Image (cartoon, rainbow, N blue to C red; front, side, top):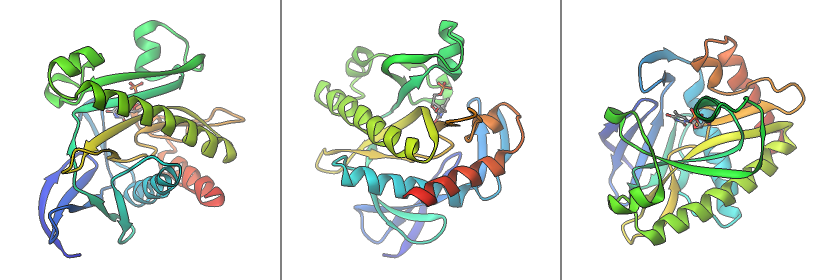
Length: 237
Ligand code: TMP
């Protein structure tokens, strides 16, 4: 497959057309942003780690019956994916309170939930990705009721698979954000990425943060944390 012109540049990835209209190439950058782009920086080596981690996890999810956009890793930073139209919802699953949940509801970070939770936010940078419920999403025609049901089912299934996998690596899956897309025939598949940018991952013994919160919160040791979490994945995949 041949890489053609750039279609889009996001905060952490570029997307290119290919000679086949059903496939795109994503290219992962080392650029990092937080707080809707207000905070900017670079995390050396992040693009390679996020590309490989996302691909290994999506291969695993595919095996467990969850369809994804993943097709083939072509080099350290670039991957062929199926072209989808993104459902403009950020789908967040939480197992443990942290981040915006802790802030919004006054719950101490680290509080273990009785059951996993799901929430949606409207993918709209100008509005700062506001929280949105499923009724709002359906009312605004962002997704049909059937698509919302499929997305919920897949998101919780992803949680079970990833919790199990990370637990074997000595890592607690605190929360994560997913995005879904629709193929040209309307099939809903998992899209975007699964990486330390989009998940909270804590060392199971020490609760040390091994994810992008180190960048968001100026904690230092960002590159080391990304390298450590990738090492754990490589030892257990
Ligand atoms: P939050 O606690 O800030 O709402 O974040 C929940 C999860 O979503 C966390 O794992 C980080 C991830 N996330 C993204 O992937 N992109 C974003 O823009 C934000 C705000 C969070």
